[in-house]
Image (cartoon, rainbow, N blue to C red; front, side, top):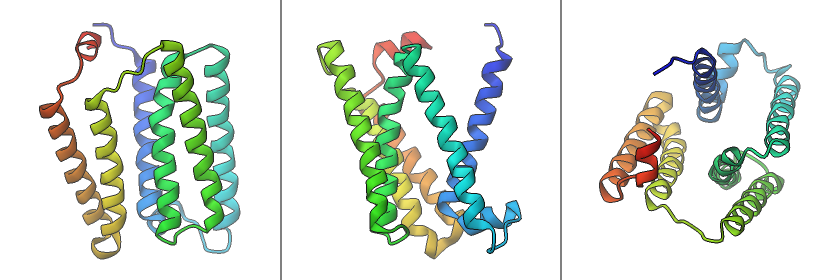
Length: 186
């Protein structure tokens, strides 16, 4: 098998960004301290950085649409549903104001629109219980990590995430082995 350095660079960057994002969700003060932010400039820099991330993400979506990258469309649906869950949780736990639900509902509406459009084009809806359980495991792990964070800190929170996530994945694999298509892709 040929090694693809560009794929490796994307993987490394993706892991770093997800790690930074998880740290920002679970321990925002820790991340701010590590990055050297003071309380006086945090909000403006955060808004500017989030805005730039939104521009980049929007451009990914535009490029995927222009080039009809259906795999990207399929990947976006569960991830946007996950965004909806996290954003809604931020409101439920009092971290964000109620108006933040507008952003959450935008994520859910977009995910549902894309998912329904993809299903209609396929003329059938394939419900893959294995992948559904994997997605549910990640969502439950995130909720569990957020709930336990105040009591155990970042390490307890990360441990809770890993335990719930791993248990869900093991259960999903044992209960509903991946479809043959997944096996053939490997």
